Figure (cartoon, rainbow, N blue to C red):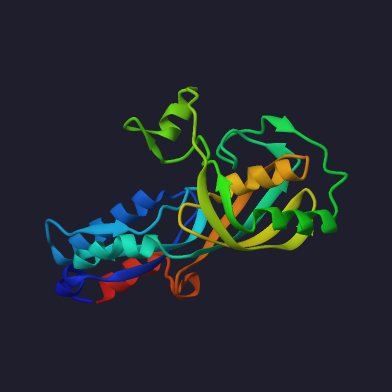
Length: 230
């Protein structure tokens, strides 16, 4: 691809690595494009944040294509991953330490699959306190890391598929197809509660956004290699 291609607009499918923020991925690609073509400025943005502890599909737009970011953000998303039952964490994932433990001996395959039905369709979901949502100008995770508590309002999200794909208690693997704004960490926490136990998200991978699939995505390293080879 040429400098003009990137300025006119590209949709890049990136497989985000573990522990990278979406912001870091965007910054890295922007820097590499600027270096490659010796340009001072180019618009680059992502269409939907992935948490640092998640991997998978990140849509990154360049140039004029950044105007379409809202379109991609609004599309249906698919995730696979692992819930660990019997324990909760303040962040609902592995970013924070386990704070409470619960029994799991009563949890059966039948109970797991029956409980998924409670989360199908349009549901009310509270985002995690450790999230990038802004309240009064500050991101919630900034408040959470300072130990400040704040009231979070529930929001409507839609889950069109929620399947348990493998059971190896306390871990259960899942596949979820859901609307924009759905927090899989919150689903892990709420699912644990519904099972009269606890739960947190221990692995997450975004596999699809609309018609885009992670199968067609490239790693950041592969993108950079391709860029340098052109």
